[in-house]
Length: 472
Image 1 (tube, one colour):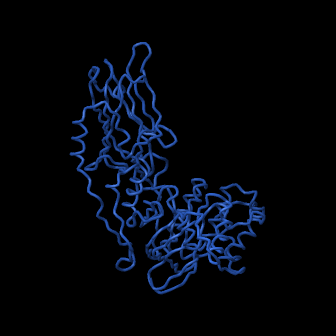
Image 2 (tube, one colour; image 1 turned 90 degrees about the vertical axis):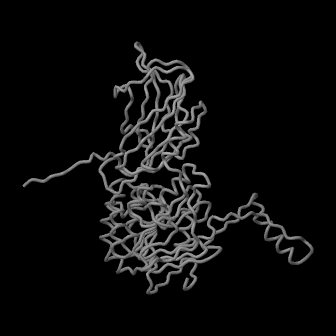
Image 3 (cartoon, rainbow, N blue to C red; image 1 turned 180 degrees about the vertical axis):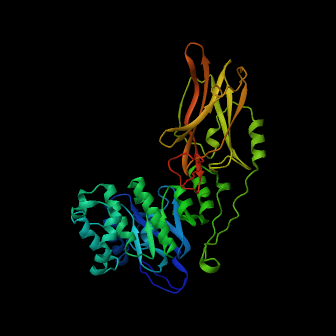
């Protein structure tokens, strides 16, 4: 770095970099007993004067450790990571709210931030008063704020509530006003935590359109989210944090895969390697990164091993996409013991493309004779809404009678024409009874997670492959 700048100091230079962080670290002291906060400085003082041995009453927790990156102007960085990985801490350090304990950072230009809901507004002040207070903190004069006030109020769209104390606002109204202020102070760097999640869908759409406008004007956007589809649509680069350290830094699409591996149980040998300091690439337009990820076995090899194993042991938990919070029920005369999701030459996947065929194999072990088993698969939203599916009974697929001890493998093939996001797969076995209809044998709801990547903006959840013609 050309210089080390900490605690939110901003400097301007003529280079192409918007944000630099070098070996950034943030450490907290954790106390086992509140009284130890008083004991520690007293004992430290006595140790300097006499024979009292020094003693540490706290233990250190590093929320961030050795985080290094550079972000070019006009680009966008999505920060991903599991809860507690240090994402919000990093944003607060970059915004000058927290002071780092190690390393330093540099922000070039005016930084505008929308972090925790409630941060920066006085609940006793009206919305209008808070607008003037916040723009003043960000360096705007009263006259400059008055010139932009109409744009702020128009974007927030909260009507007469602008002259009411913000303590009377709903969370949606609050974030509308906070975001309207953040984007209308002409920031060089816009920093957004997950606060937008409380806004309605239409407001979120308006915000992300503004992200695009800000980037096209040469400004920089950094935001934290758990929504991988937003990173894919709105970010050039991704930073994945794990336990406060850089787990991945590079192109957004590859970063999403690394994050999903973390979320859904990838083994240590399959985690992506981490580069150290990532400098500006040629022309300052992209982040450089090591793209050589860990080797993966070809799908044909994985599938052959899957088919060869005939067992009754449940191995669902070994799959990357498995959801341990599944809902399961049935009489268990047959049990689903393993599954495999395959797309192209990739097997045991979590992420897939919206327009690429997907094969889902389910292995079933029979513990009793069954004359007419029925196998089914359903795709659901994360909150349990059925989007589509099929079973062998509806599709008139002939299924042979099964004997106790048999193992069958069922393949479901479909194209996940869905909007980008996370979905759940549900598997089921039933048996048709002439009097009672389909009897549940083994049903596993929400058992596997599927992340669909789709760069297109869709209305709703399902891609209808619709065409439009206008005649005049």
